[in-house]
Image (tube, rainbow, N blue to C red; front, side, top):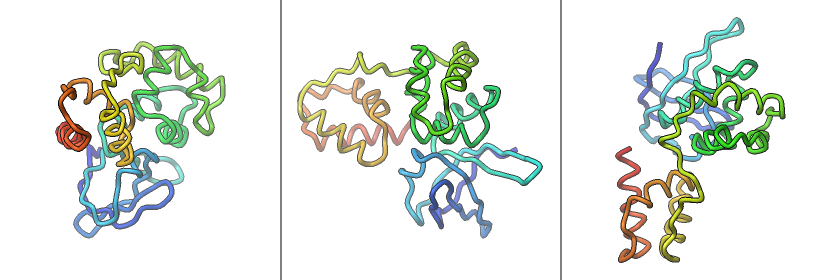
Length: 194
């Protein structure tokens, strides 16, 4: 029903935001990963999942389509509802979830509140064939040339980006002759275009 809502953040709570769009305030439940990247009065696009239940209408939203796509995938798993999906996405990035599924590593998924061994195993079993292997960043493939790169990674992560998200971009840049500030500027420029 809704693809996305563009509006101004007027309130940030523990597990949701209020987004003003043309004088209407939408309560949108979201992950901690999305919350960390939001500021009051900022104009943003939230990619939306509309949930109609007996007890009400709920909007779930994320600042990236990748996070929304992972949320939709998690909801395909039997016994995983929006609350558990949000818990998983608040604890892990979409990339970490995909890696856990492909590596059959239920322990990583169990780090999320409300996810036990049975649920983690069910997620792995039911999503193994649905996860796109092409866009996964494996930590083993990370090339960190020097201290400048490591400092840049930490700096960009402090802005709310995940390590894997940053490294995926850094691996496409020749950082050998760049200082920390240039690396940060280039990575942020490329991330904003994704």
